[in-house]
Image (tube, rainbow, N blue to C red; front, side):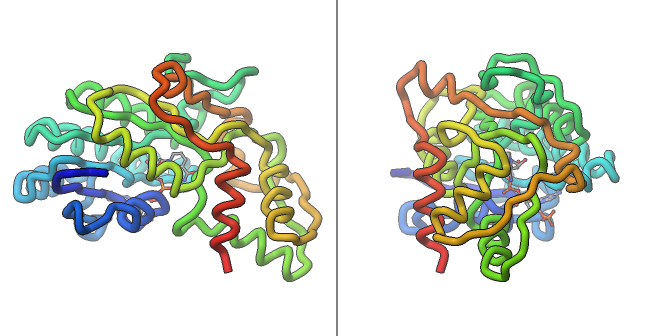
Length: 281
Ligand SMILES: NC(=O)c1ccc[n+]([C@@H]2O[C@H](COP(=O)([O-])OP(=O)(O)OC[C@H]3O[C@@H](n4cnc5c(N)ncnc54)[C@H](OP(=O)(O)O)[C@@H]3O)[C@@H](O)[C@H]2O)c1
């Protein structure tokens, strides 16, 4: 339960942002929801003016260019939004003494590990998306004192349509194509939003990995969706999915800091997925 105050959610039209808007009870808090059309995070003056005028107590930065292919095509736009956007939010938060909750990604790692990545492991992004997200993390650490950097992976739910697309294809008797050899922890937007709402009330600042427990391949993820929905289809691995070729092969995150502090436990990915599937009509 959040007792105060005013929360600015940037990137509020996106998958996670829209789920946060839905879950934060507007009776308890005042929500300021913006997206690119209202406050472009890459424009410093827009961010500072909005923060100065509204003085939120919390800023949750969900805004980003998340399409890895689009980032490769336009590096400047990726760094402007994911890097300088993060800097602008950090400067604004510091200026008004707000807490900043900044979202980051498993793509800051190279995907070559054999064990799940912990928060302190070496970052080495291979894609422009990953590099811009890592640059954003560093900007937050440099320009803001009260921050939570939250890395997650394979977020589904809310406006994320991939789960629904798999179900639709199966119902139409189509094959389901998934990238070969990619492993991570699918994480429901709802579970991630619950964690964000919990952690932002604390003063335990720093970097967190927040993903559902366990891990799977893209193929296993698709097959589990079909199993929970009682559907059958061929799930075929392919190298021909463009966006996927920019993603790390193995990007399983370990919620190490949450585990050693005993503060919070994310559910198993299958459990969260089943709950989500049961909400789909
Ligand atoms: N989705 C995942 O699997 C995943 C995994 C790990 C981490 N994350 C991180 O989690 C956060 C939220 O992800 P998400 O999946 O909710 O992303 P999303 O659905 O792509 O939403 C991001 C939102 O930010 C908006 N945006 C883009 N440029 C902006 C700008 N200059 N100013 C303000 N808003 C802007 C986007 O608008 P447009 O759609 O018009 O561009 C979109 O509405 C991001 O930081 C992402 O990097 C996501």
